[in-house]
Amino acid sequence: MGFTDALLWCLETERKMNDRSGIYGFTQRTLAYNSNRIEGSKLNENQTAALFEEGFLPPTEDIYKAKDIEEMNGHFLMFNHMLATIGEPLSEKLIKAFHYELKAGVFQDRANGYAIGDYKKTTMPEDVGNQMYSLLERYHSVRDKNLETIAALHAKYESIHPFQDGNGRTGRIIMFRECIKNNITPFIVQNDNREVYITALRKAQTEEDYTKFVKYFESEQAAYQKQCELFCVEERYKECVLNF
Image 1 (cartoon, helix red, strand yellow):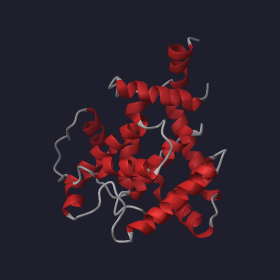
Image 2 (image 1 turned 45 degrees about the horizontal axis):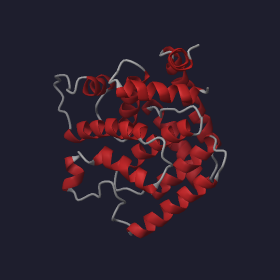
Image 3 (image 1 turned 90 degrees about the vertical axis):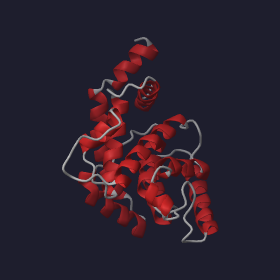
Image 4 (image 1 turned 120 degrees about the vertical axis):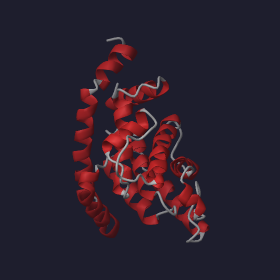
């Protein structure tokens, strides 16, 4: 029994039970808030929680931006799709499906003619497809994946920038997923640490030096692990599944 086995069991069990009071609810709210906020969303943590838990936003004197709401709901759906398909190997088809869940309900993107669930058209689609095929082929060739493997995948994925918009959010959901699949403690990139994240990402992309990237991810792993402990993830798994 590993930590990621316990975490995945809790996430899947709580999702199926529509239980939003545990680690599933915490992860959905926190990942969606931070990942969207990094990309410019104005919704705060309380507003994100209200949207996820109740399906509405609290009254405010500020004006809510439709795209922020649509993308937040899309992120919730993308996370659910990630959990539902976690048994599948990472593929171009699956990554496109993540993007579709994130962006299918965004009116502005559809009105602008952006490709939803497909690669961007501003670059020749076959070029993007070839780059993505090569990236995933190299990634799957690594037998024993570690945090640096995940960091390299993310850096190269963001360099390819396969979609018109939504690359960062799909990229971060991929990291969370691939950590779980490879028995690596997953993590959430915090908006408060955006500068550290972006600086480390740029260094990884330009110099193929993943030292700072991995070190930063390790700090976020520790933060997420602490939250999992507060929600008694391993204890619940042992009690309900292993009958300890």
